[in-house]
Image (cartoon, rainbow, N blue to C red; front, top):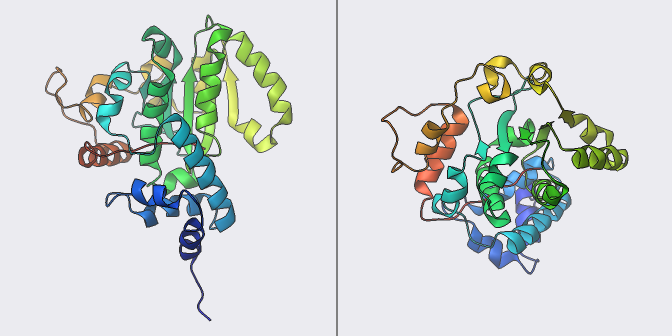
Amino acid sequence: MVDFSPLDEFKHLLNTKPFSHEIHSFCTPTQSLDNFLSSFLRYKDNNVKSSMKMLQSYWLFRSEKIGTTRLSVADIRSPLLSKFISIPDATDLEGRQMVIIFFDRILENRLAQPEILKTIWFFLENMMDMPICQEKGICLVSIFENSMSSGSKGLVELIFESIQNKVPVKLGSVFLLNPPPWLKFFWALSSNFMKSKLVRRVKLLSGNYQAQLASFIERKNLIKELGGDLQFDHNEWLRAFFPDLDLNDISRPGNTLYSSLSGSITSLVDSKVDIICQ
């Protein structure tokens, strides 16, 4: 009797699903089917059934909200240049890569929801190839304006819906800075029905959040906008994606995530890539 590996079982199970051909078409030489499926298996500790359930959720959401083809940097140029998202060379105390979202910039630039989702998924799907993002996860920092109206609630809910229980990138820690009153109220109610492990990952910090944040993330890993000492040149970061930007001739940083993303982006300019976070 032949013993099949979890990956072999996963591939066999996938071939029984109606969306199997779409997944095969979605994978490319850059991200093979084996590498793609292995991301889900790592996240689910090689539990094939759980991995398939997650893959189905992933593909259903992606098909409806983003599409069935891979994203390229050209697809996210406009929202990325708005600087609503930053991924500096920094981690929290647990070694999780930081991802920062500025909600005020989303509103100022009047970004459409599809643009926002595509940009976030672009990075998350690149992170799917990094085992550390399944093991330790990422540290998501979201900065709000207290003046954000409840009309923005749908946008916030959509973003968090898109990155939970769909993509094999763990949401290791979450910091919501200066959340508006409606978000505090929503969290106070909904957290009563969530798993305690998840609730412990999320922290709402108001007022002088810079000082509070420093107790979870070293100042050397906090960009100046968050009260830290880290020098982060957003234009420099963007040049890795868009070399034609009219910026000063400056060298590119060399952190692991930055190098991995910029390298893969270079080879994927004419293909499609996505992202998700869990």
